Length: 343
Figure 1 (cartoon, rainbow, N blue to C red):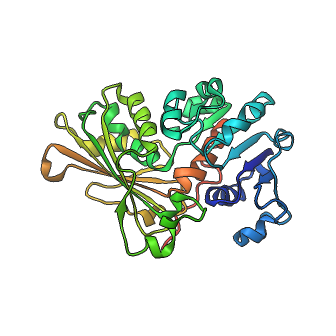
Figure 2 (cartoon, rainbow, N blue to C red; figure 1 turned 90 degrees about the vertical axis):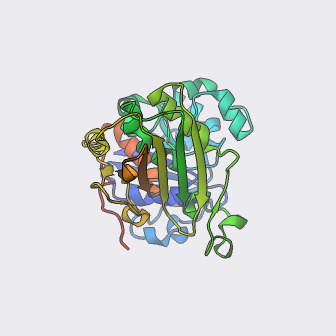
């Protein structure tokens, strides 16, 4: 049995980690931390977990206690994991970080976008970016995995087959993306209030969003340095979900449906829909699935890819558990093979 700690367990991604790990046959949550909620039973904050985590309480973060775990998930704001991870790794603990602390390879780029120097650049260089569909074998051997962001997961999986096949112009990529309000986290924020977000639809981060360098880093890793991406995120009045509409200029005639089906044939969490279909976010709710459809409207020179995920699962906690499974040699789908919730 793998002893697990979760740092920052009182937010949406922490709750999703608990939900998924509750049915994991080889993982036991030993420590669940929250400075604000220390001493409170987890089932008091998350009554949906009654019967699964009775007796488990939130505790203040403590390195010595966490060092007794085999794996620690960080479901924390940026800059927390990088303060604690080096000592945990030095004690043999394997880390999956759901924040941005170990996603970007370049410490200077991290400082540019997050406003402060990286606390452990050496460990940053050793960390593995946790997108299994690209980095599966590296993840198996990793001590630290930087779990991808929600937008970057959908965008990279949507563009991946096209860029690998050199089938599109990598210098004219467009990602038009929408997210539910849970992507902003559980903290009280004006823009996430029901009265502010409902019956409305708006773009944000148009001048530059923190996920842009992460997406570009991944796309450059696939296609080489000649990548240029226009990325515009939007907030839509729903709780869960990411919908990415991706555009690329084709370089010749190709059976794009066959290309996507072949690339993802053996991927347990990527579903390529039949030709002409269009996925919706509700079809992946509470699942670890990325559902994709590819189109070439009117046979013209633009290919359009539609990719949907649940931002809290494949975009966060589910992908973290997928990475955990790879790191400890379990079947990749363990605790993640339930169908989506409908409606």
